[in-house]
Amino acid sequence: MAEKPNITVAAGLIWRRDGMVLISKRPPGGPHAGRWELPGGKLETGEDPPQALIREIQEELGIRVEVGEEFGRVTYRYPEVVVTLIGLHAKFCGGEPQTLEVSDWRWVKPAEVAYYEFPEANAQLFSNTWDVPPDGWVE
Image (cartoon, rainbow, N blue to C red; front, side, top):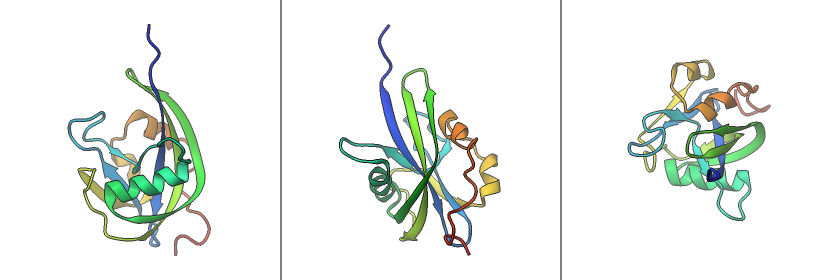
């Protein structure tokens, strides 16, 4: 049996000053289409997780973020691929979110995240302590 491909993904918990966080919806036609996720994407050769997150957020949503500390890391075995998902706090720094490579986006209260359907790896990431923003990021 062939080995499953392994990918590493940086996922951003993007905090706005009012305490809301940004989630995005996966576009149709791909894996987990229509599910919500923390914005981010695969690391490219030579990138570390913060660099990948900044690039992916700009490509997918057209906004700027400052990357903070890691809040969790999970490895999940999907039928077709093994994903290592690295959760990073990120501070919203500007721009208006756009649907460049996502089908939708929303600012939600951390407690509302539970009402959205996420891929399994994202859901496991939420088993970490994630819902407390870094000091000074929220008013």
